[in-house]
Length: 469
Image (cartoon, rainbow, N blue to C red; front, top):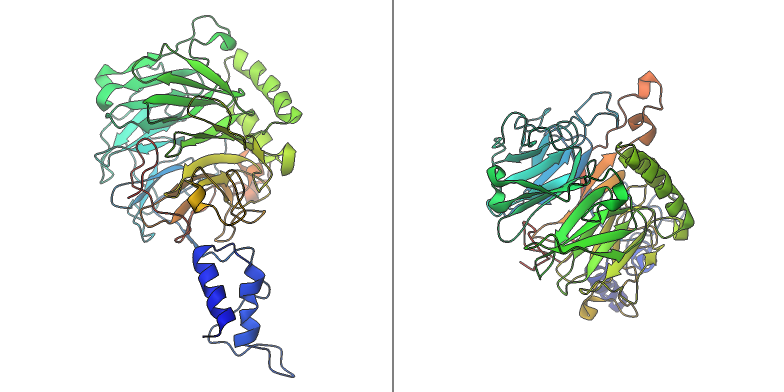
């Protein structure tokens, strides 16, 4: 093998983003266009016309009742669980989330019923709330039924027909996690409260941070549309606030000891790396525009409405650069890392964050710009490409693309290092009811996209901070 060919092959194996034009030039070396002809004599057709932004292999899978998948999680066997906003084939709109639960094998084969997915147990419209516990049971939170639901590893509902709604005290629900000690924690984005199920036992469930003042800014947990959470190595729980510019943190053993730390505007997903750093997605970035949107959101919140639709519209319209989204990186003590805040680099509207086995950090984008997924250098210098530092982009300027990516919500890494991405919405105008009847079924995103072997493998299910297999 020629030296230049061997060098190129080694480069692509280590870093799929590395010098894509140089790799593409091998096409001319191996299969030049014959004199007087238009096409190359290649063993397979078609072939690329120009160099890609990165050498990646993404494939899209659907079926199993999948429709507008939101939060996802990989279980101990490498199967992917996905919570659905909507129902297959319906005139789905943001006004009502009624979707079910889907499951896929590690090879992309649907394991849930073809059209409906897994139903029952109170499941009705899952958003960014889904987790898998140590028994491989799947927990989710809902918008439609305003409940917490649980299914066993085979898709059989464990929760009652209405789910666990605590006598109707829950509003529209978002983030949910299982912790290493077996507890379940869930967030109520509408009522600004937190639900705790000790050892996953709903009979012992309690609601925390219930605000009795009527002023959303006086919440005892400093929660303002709490969206997602994660637990760190010290058993501290970090919570993002979709209507604020801070994260709340408290010890799992004593939620009364709440602290807050400044971030960008409209916190969404967050992830804890192996060093205890917390990577926070700011959907509206650090710009004045983000502050203006949150002023409007606060008005909605004071009227006891759900501010999420207002935020969704603003997020979808985000642009790149300073006026797009951003990422805040907090050290374990809550101080900001030197690289924080991070903006640009393809972070149009970062929604979810996940850490791989090399401590590099990955982000999805809920953006009308049809952006790719973004990979940033994390806390492990040994995993940085030459010349890079913490917070720098490893992915191309527009992120990794392909595979039919749409408006993304979540992304997850499996034990083989594959990166799974949920296509949440396809046409935001259809989802918001702004299109004519012939397009009224085009709101829901289609499929989950798998980028094969792109990340360093991790142990699944993700319970607590990232761990290698």
